[in-house]
Length: 550
Image (cartoon, rainbow, N blue to C red; front, side, top):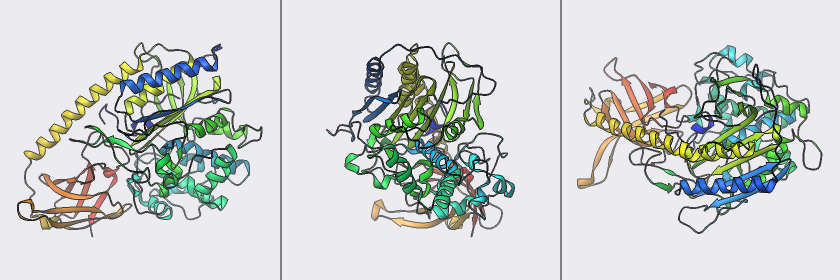
């Protein structure tokens, strides 16, 4: 992936984040006293968001929630819900928060652990008899903790095409097809971000509690915390109260070109009912501030009662797998972590000598982040309704420094520099991709040799057929490809170079793919797939498909 980040690369690449759990072998500084008032911190945060918005003028909306010592210091919306419209965003505007939902799913399981209905280190089969994976050993041994920690051994984003982009799969179908998704790495050996295992965690919640995941979240989390504006599923979000999705859809490639509104509602591009436990929630800054307060207070609610125990809170912050490591801070990056780890639904690391925990979230048309600094009892969230990952980087890093009273880096200038470098590389790559197609060799067989139904063990069927559209000079005949469970992934399949073809999906919100056919007999019998763009979002896990002609 090039330096120009896709809409969800912020999930896994540049966290700034919090935990009360120690990082193994890492000496952390004692938290210095902060004599600033809440008003001073709020004013600095507000000014920073406004500076960032001015630096990225195409960004429609941002919302900020800032919490200190259990108190909402600032909850505010900036900009507009819809590009070019006088529809201001405020603290009550709903945003898709995507994978920020993961720490809510972990908290649901913490509640069940406190009730004695679930154990963190119990195999999934205890709760879902018959559960299996493509590696039988992993299917037998994988625990609740493993599903929440991205350490099962799946590749990055493996299986996401079961539900991304919007698919017709049910939760039960996703769970059943998870058994066939390839496991490419060692069990508990390395970190690879995996939405699929959070779907499994959600299934455990449903089986043990007797409630759907969304009903459990609503009744056991939102109602208890007082989050009356938030909804557990995007289809429940009122478009009139929501920040609508925006992005860059080319030309020449996705994440390039002018900013534009890409949907009339969140659910139009983010219907994650079948994978809700991995990223289904839509929330407001007003509500999410309450959630941050609960997490900073280790599960204690405003009235003094408990949502989950202090022991469960500690367990959710405990590092389970190393994400990355380095030699630590440099002059250019004084916030660089020595060790970044993943706990359960939160990434935990050192930041400027203190412990932080964070998570990012990304959906089509919106990215977001939550940052907790429990040693200071301060945390914040930033929600956006566009895919400007370097804006989010500047917001998150700058606000983290403000929270820690260590403002010594111009994160706008730094992020703008990296953004420009990445854009240059991406545009160069786009030119090279098109040039290779223009000079490409023709396929070795007539087009009808590629027609047929092609099946992958975990995704299902992809159909290739011949199609004619238009009349007269506008008449076009060629191959048409269709992912049978993903309505948006259908379009022309063009010769690219030899036995490699490329898709041209009419829906420019989606990512195109290369398909390479393997010629062994009179007709191609197998094919492999990969994304066209170097900046492709990892959830388009085309590379995990292994197609065989039916």
